[in-house]
Length: 223
Image (cartoon, rainbow, N blue to C red; front, side):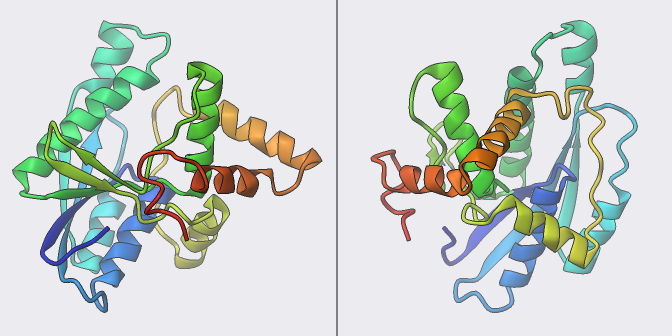
């Protein structure tokens, strides 16, 4: 995932996952054999009541440059377009703004904070809503932007992320998005949790199925 001289951007939403990733990568720099640099970037969606000052202080403590990219995405989606299903468009616009900021900062890679639970959730969402077996890979090349996407937390359980955040008092910023907690992803996450009550360990078995599949990128992701 990380090679000598990489300049890696970390997209910071303010949530537990992205802040855990930032903390982990900043400390990894101390002993990782390949030298790399970090840039932390937040795409401010424009809700007007998001306070990222605690994140800024954390970045100072970790010696990571922090950039906030201000946008009007919230206004466009919820006021101008009044989207009834806002998540897809929001994700595309947010990713576009993030990629623009990444390129301005001269980064060649971007680290996403997807963990093991996200991998499985995405696979089930693909089955239910698209009718195909698919999920994202540990490493992806984006030819349109000439960026590599890496996912260093991909083998980490969400429960471990929560434990890490609580133990280290990581300053999580609560999302102001009105759709937060009411998404298809949250529905699928809850669905798998319900299945796990009758079939304990189902999420791990689903993850194993992904590892053993022929999905692009997972031949190098097996352990």
